[in-house]
Length: 484
Image (cartoon, rainbow, N blue to C red; front, side, top):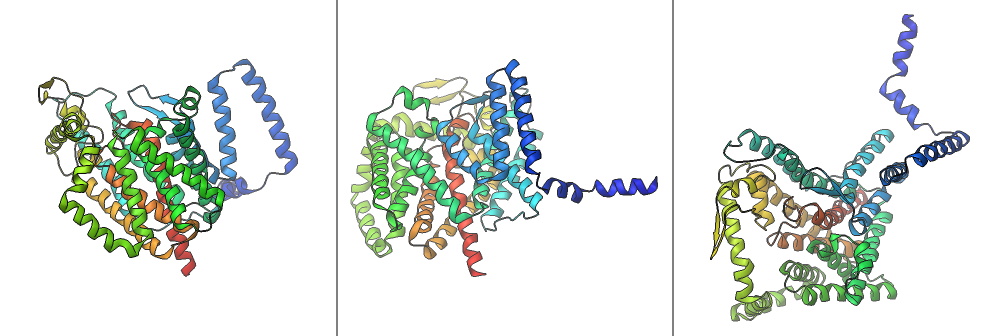
């Protein structure tokens, strides 16, 4: 009896379970299991037909496919962010979407596959440490914010779900970044991801600019196409390939030119009143030219400084942005909002008020702007840096800025090494995209949205930027492997 117990214990060890799961299933057994599974599913779903069960079946099938080829999941995130507009209710004001839910699911699958194969490799980068510390800081702010919440500040019983939803935005952005940073077969899959985005996103954007919005187009696109990070990413990837990749065929060159024309029409003509779009696109274009033509940098600095001194650039930009009328309508009012958010956050400037908490504090007293009076204001700062200060305090904001600098320096180092080909275009493009992203963060909560403002619908656009930014870390590790 004791011998049998020892044998059973030996067979139930973790190693034996992993070995059992790793054994290939004979083809005849696999075919029989598939046929039996289809018959059982048909019998069950035939009597309980609904969209929920159909979706569950599709997700189950997708998980099986992703276990075999996990890189396909990254393509699915891109397609979902661009084309799947279905929202999922959480019982609060927050609604989720497929793109954001796919990212953590793919990360878990990546971990399981690595553990199963005993080859869990983590791409090293100087940008990883501040990003991880930033996530830990957000958790600390969540705990301290709730522990020190004053009874006089109202909040609903399920407000902690809203706070977790805000934390989830930070986590999902990081997971998207690390998924591509650790992608296998980089030389094959990074171009596939890039051209999938350029063909689907760029193609639909070009159709939109050529024929205008229509019902059929709105049914196959998401809110992503109306958000500034999408146009920044499109400008960066298309412009990067055009400027750096001399290996492009004529057809692709023409296609990318069409895409760039669509971007310019959108940013400077169709929605020229949305400052984030043309400012972000201009920042990306400027960085791309700066990286591609280093011999013109001194000339650009001298000419730009001269125009600024003469007031030609500042005056022209001010008028293009709407002038005094636009400033009174939006600019000055934002300063009032920022002042309110900063003033309430000074209650705990080190770790902040906690994720998504500042609206509760800022709405405690009426807000006055010119001749308007809001008795119960629902306040957004419309500035991502101010939002981060309110969410996670100076600690979290400082860690994010550390990460921002590390990622920018990584882009510059890679740009010195890769000047041509697809990789050169990708590095130049994503370095420019990161600068453009940091610029538009001053104009709204674009990259790490406030759940009550841009929220999860808009997060689909910045999620794509985080996804492709991870490619810089992947290329860095490819660079390190070449040195070994």
